[in-house]
Image: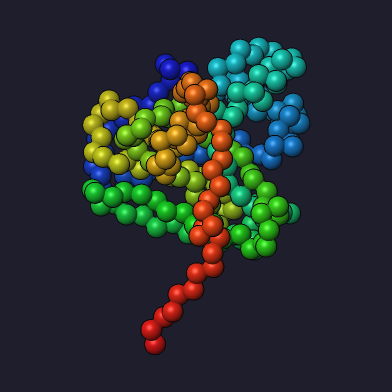
Amino acid sequence: MREKDEQRCHQIYKLEHFHSIFLVDHAWTYRVEHARQQLEQIPGLLPRMASLMGVDFHGEDPPPDVVELILERMWKYNQTYQLSQGASLRTASHYISLSVSMCFSPLLCCVCVWVCVCVQSAEEKVPVWYIMDEFGSQVQHLDHPSCCMAPFFYMQGQLAYTLLWPLQDLQEGDEVTRDYAYGETNPLLRRCRLLPWIHDDLEGVSSAVTEPADSYYEVRTITLDT
């Protein structure tokens, strides 16, 4: 993400205000196997993605190197959710149960999203990739962010959005930031997850896998008092 591209507040938002929650549009939603075809065939998509990702593009006929650059850079902007195999957005309500709970306490402000996909195996779950609009895609990373963002699927409209809400009171001019590795508390895993945006030297990290103790595989039973 380009360092000069950042988002700042233009108003004052209070954490306790329930209206301080916003919808961010998704500019492009796709399956990986269709990405190249959509960039080449959907009118306006290629120049919009090129502008969003800082790729120079002029003219109507996309040169191959521009498409390749976007396919390479899009992973810094990609977000994902899952649908069951064969489900379309039109019929997603038959396959997905999505609920959101929100807590606006000053001590704890989070959106918890549960996605229950009615399939039996992980192989049947197909990831849907999306890139947020120009605003959402330029929200920068911070380990202690000012805001949080989470996907939200609107069942009635069969549309996905991203919710954005403040984690602290925001004054005019404050930068809107989020944690790209939200929820990951393991320091090493956080470093790995942030590699696309933050260069890190991991050569000294051992790749050896320690086998769990035998007790890890033991079957444990719990007796409930009746």
